[in-house]
Image (cartoon, rainbow, N blue to C red; front, side, top):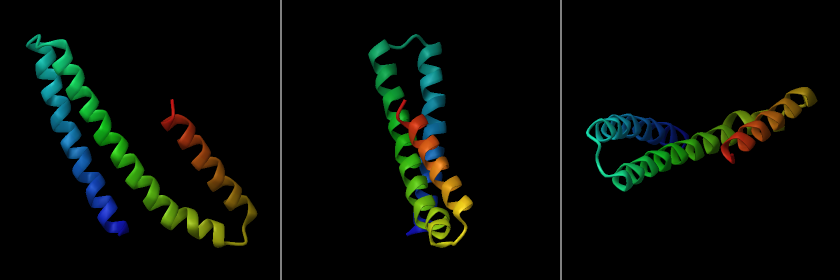
Amino acid sequence: MIKNNIEKSQINFKKTISLLNKINSMVENKDYCVDIMQQNLAAIGLLKSAHHMLMENHLSTCFSNAMNSKNEKLKNDMIDEILKVSKIANK
């Protein structure tokens, strides 16, 4: 499942790059604003999906390993990292 999430994330990133190039062309061609906004939202959706897959992967591996360790500093650092990333993602 973890490898699958990484591969799916990579696919989403490649799709996003392609979509951003399309959006850039649409802007240059002065396409209809709403069409550009819809494509922009599609790109955002792909990035959010990739983010969730990466988060799931991190929680299942790195975070889980840290929480199972006896190193309290490592545990606290991992919790802080997740909180920081979550705060940024929710802006």
